[in-house]
Length: 365
Image (cartoon, rainbow, N blue to C red; front, side):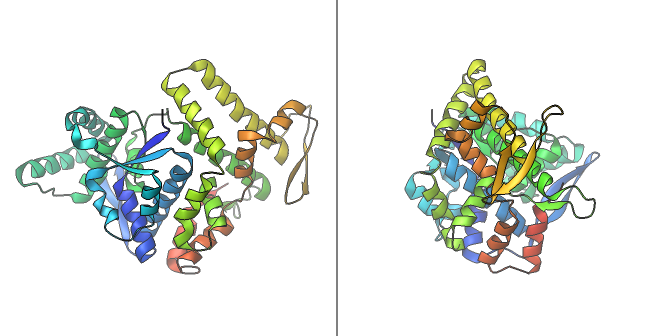
């Protein structure tokens, strides 16, 4: 089974706008919930564009295919978008999800009910439904696109048994409403694992000072793409070229995903053991050890050397194959220099937009 994902044309539209017009200076509306009310909180459109690009980049490298609803590809196909190269490459694939709308309707409405966790959301959504049924217009288009559209795309993933990478505004609504996407997505589990390892390494390096503990944390794969690309226009083509470098990891993810789909507990435990092995190896590299076996850390060749006996077999395993690839991603850059390079690619180094993007990826150690 192909290791595929359903993605939003909305995300591809924002990414296309990023490449054609640059980082946008206006704001988007994030739906936030407080009590039984919802409201719109302004968020920089440039942040949304960037998050969409980073999510797409990870999918582009480690998915076999990215499925988008063919009915709405005009949102990005009608302009000169670098994403067209990914479509010609066969990774981005338009798919006729709405050829069987009856399959999507039931799951979509169930998902809507879960997302509508406040009375105001339920009332506003119903007004959109009534308006659409009456005259094909919705009183609140942003809510409709975020909630109703997000539920529909999530339903597509459920019906066709694929993961789903939502548009950043939809992702925020899911999180804010307490709605959770299915956990059985191998790539999402892997990227979460990599993010956690990068945070751990950064904390070890820079410490936890209450004033100076902030650090930039962007996903590992976008870091690699930004490092390799010389300009904004090369970002998509660079990601496509890197697919060959990550073929082994993509194959591993496919087997991991198949084990999840088959609910193969024995195989899943084996994949988790490999991730645990990477986790333990990284702990040793950065100086985390047990009380009876302390670990020291020494610098060399721009990376950390292991200064503990540890488990020789596990240490050896982490020098090769998928584990070595994951270790390189974790230690491949903290993200600060790469984020500066990224905003420079779009001519925003030192600008307000550049500052907002850097702050959006700044976390507290």
